Length: 264
Image 1 (cartoon, rainbow, N blue to C red):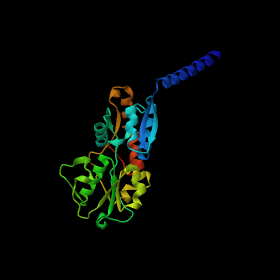
Image 2: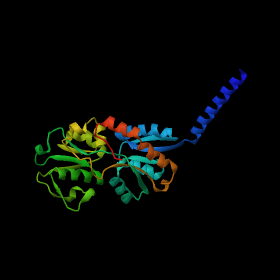
Image 3: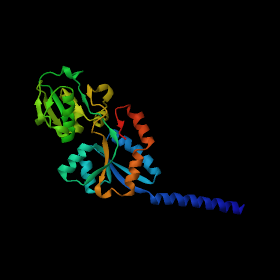
Image 4: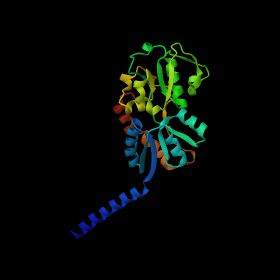
């Protein structure tokens, strides 16, 4: 009887020691996200990563500028909220030593309106809001061009600005606003190009409410970014593996119904 008790006691001690060892080995990182789908997906990534000994602390931001600034300053270990063209522009403009380590999801940008049901209904001089950051603003202008509303210089590319408009038959007035603020300003303009993460956060349903939307293929897959100096750290591979897990892909497909698409 005593021997059986001692064996159970030893087993309990062993289990406790293993648990304590796993806890001791767990590494903690801070990952910045924007609200809405990015934050929701990262909550699932966090659960998956915990099984591999990686503790993710999620830090939520309300704009596009601060997550990269915080990462560059060392206040974050990674962020997951932007597409590669935006990161490239930030690195070039601000000198950040940040790199992409994995693709995450794609959010097709949509054009929304409370005043018209189709872009053809826009009247001459209509006000159209677009994001005021270089890459998302250019993205919006390219979408407007694809819809036949305006024409850009041939070499304008992904960083097109309103100054690159060479033909504007309806004399649309382009209103540049902070991307996160555009959903709240939708009633003040005739139409607006809105990033899907902000559209969904505002209660819009891209597949139902957008009067025009990007196709699924393009250069705008979102990414995980880290500091270049951290590229060889073990937690990077763990973070990417957790994000690219079947559990996360299943969550994306079930939760967002095609409005957000896994990019791996």
